[in-house]
Amino acid sequence: MFANNVGGIDRILRIVVGIALIAGYFLNPNGAYSWAYWIGVIPLFTGLFGTCPLYRLFGFSTCPVKR
Image (tube, rainbow, N blue to C red; front, side, top):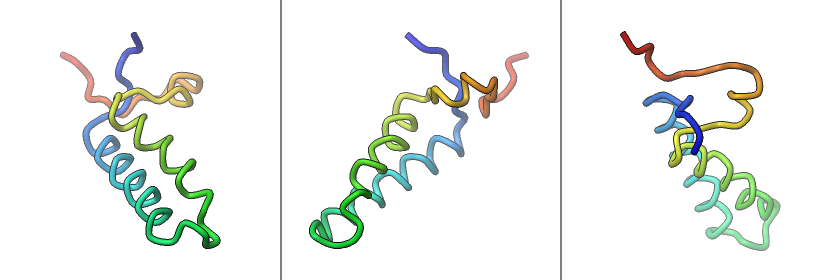
């Protein structure tokens, strides 16, 4: 579908941040961080699928160069 443009460390960080934001929402769903669930879904999905639409738009890639 889409070519991978998110490298290893970037993927791990995105997944960890996404899970942390979603967990923060579930720990306090009525608090000031109710938006964190929806914000956390974005890095989680981009980390899991290995592709970022904004990276593609701006021509970035954190994947290692193939030789």
